[in-house]
Image (cartoon, rainbow, N blue to C red; front, side, top):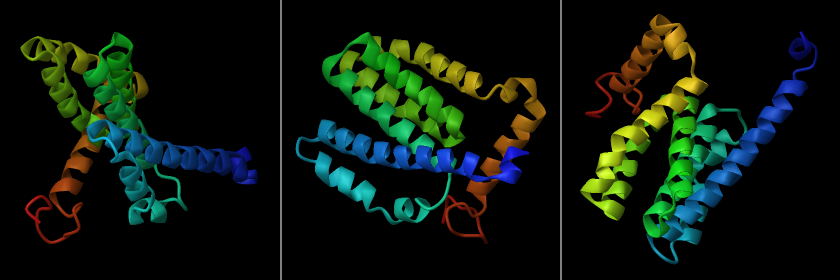
Length: 181
């Protein structure tokens, strides 16, 4: 009822969170760029900040912004762990990946760079950790998306909807399967 009486009570905090996520994503992109190649951080941050999609969506409230910020920080922590080690770095990368997945399903792709950094730092021994770390990512996803277990019918319907978007037009073509386009 308070939202109907004064939408600003919900919209203003959501917009502030969105702006903070945008700024955080720009910072994280800069740090990721710097970790991948010394001197590339500023260029990466500028490219993200000036991305037309980010500029266009900055006027709205989208969950993708939260997912992107969490995903970029997860990648940054993965790269920090690859470079310096430390259980807390790896743990924070996994936690951020789980929360990003909880924000939006496409963040599941973060398990791929997780395997990559495990391999690069520790080889086969690192990859042996991967299934357990993916289980933690999925557990955090379930913690933030409890209806996946509580209402599995609705969850499967939602996953099918996202899959159909991807297959038929999500990539900019409404007439044929999107991936081939």
